[in-house]
Length: 231
Image (cartoon, rainbow, N blue to C red; front, side, top):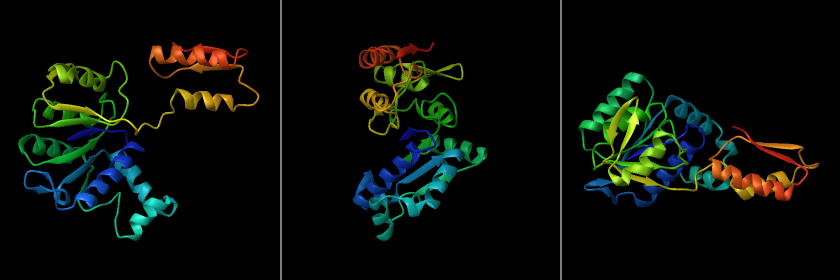
């Protein structure tokens, strides 16, 4: 399973969840003849590895739930099955090994929308086989390879990577709930709490329909505020 993930926040959230699954299911099979506690998890992103190391150094500031796990002897961000790939040579070796072998593995690699980074090499090597899975844990913006994989993967379509077409035979999944972005109501509540109200608001991020809907709500809430959709 390949998980395209951004280096800060998202990767650490997923590692925390994976460690919980491994701890919960232990010797139960994650795949034929492979127990969960032998399932390898790979982080192939130097930036994500650096951020994860910083998270570990900040253990004294972890919340009560995470502190309880540490007290019980568990290590959510440095468990036994976790492997970190650093050098480019090791990255290429990992891609080649996973493409040749049929050993189950979970790989987290950047970037989150598949527009660049090491995840692209994994996609090139793994998209063409139905035994593989691509799991998106974040929003895929229009025009990105990640969005194309989401839109056309279930239809047997293709995605362009570095100017070449790659057919999508891998299974494609998406889960929500890991986004670090505020939703529409969160943004409205944030603006409502600004005193005095801003004279101008510029909407610079998001799809056109979503920005237009937010602009309409902001104008209704703050008629004296100029709301601009940046192009």
